[in-house]
Image (cartoon, rainbow, N blue to C red; front, side, top):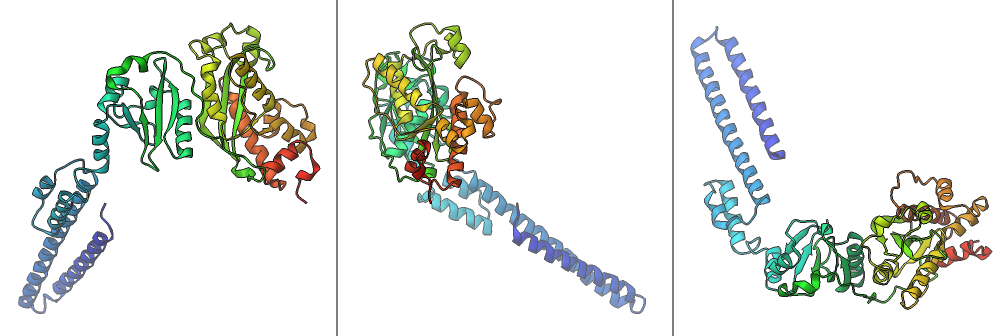
Length: 437
């Protein structure tokens, strides 16, 4: 699209054309008085129109050449500097093309761009390495990764690896500022260990798989390994601002549908920062209970035997769950009961009982805000605070409903002047001193 210079030139030509037309009309009116002189004047006007047309045509070609040069540079994809200069004409646009070619030749925007240099380094590594863009597409990978994992550039990594688990690993890498280890489920079955590194804003995510191309069998086997989170938990103090507090909603389902008994069959979480809900950072994890799921349990939580078929047992699922809860205040309807269910499952699986994180019970907060809501179910609380539940589908819907309910409650608390984590916990406990004077 041509800019302001082109519009100004066209306007100038139009004004000049109208002036010549006016002169032609005036000359025609005077032709009766002096026919010979009028013929000379009409010839001069004709020459002016011809010169004007030639100048307009030349200017039009000039701007067209500049536009093509701009499009060529914008869409440059490895074109050689010599090729760019060869197409240049002997005019101003040609001078710009030759200057651009010279810049390319000297490496200012040269053929060896940073992404290509990175690809060259990655290709030389024996470990499988994949670099993702911000949308989870494979931007760069080395031959070891292509052969070892069956991946290709441009593919969606979430077609091959579990989205929630990879999200958690990326979040940990960004939070810690260093490479972290994780165990991810493969879409084709089995699990794969990986190291994750955040390369910086808009620079992508690097995944390094600790196996060489000739050692594919251990990586592709379905062997399950237990890895515990390797980063220190974030301390959440009472003075932390409530609206900037890292939180996670938690929903846990057991085979019987009752939290106090039965093995865990599903765990759902949704990440939050204050009232901001990050739906994309969610965990939807089925767990193999090791026994049939009774029909009455399915009627309560919606998890069927077919859904948990092929899922990992709780001992292998726990590291992923622990990562989802790490460094956050845990919120939910009956959140202490849900955490108690996870602690019981850890004991039953022979795992160390986890340290209890800070919690905010949504049922208690709602009841203190409105005593009429005492003993209300999650569905009743959602209706009371205007949260739609009819558009939520699947067994993990309660985790998102809890997150949106928490967002609404935190907004109400802020309006009441409750600004810190400690004040919110005290308010939920019914302590009068929680409210500011």
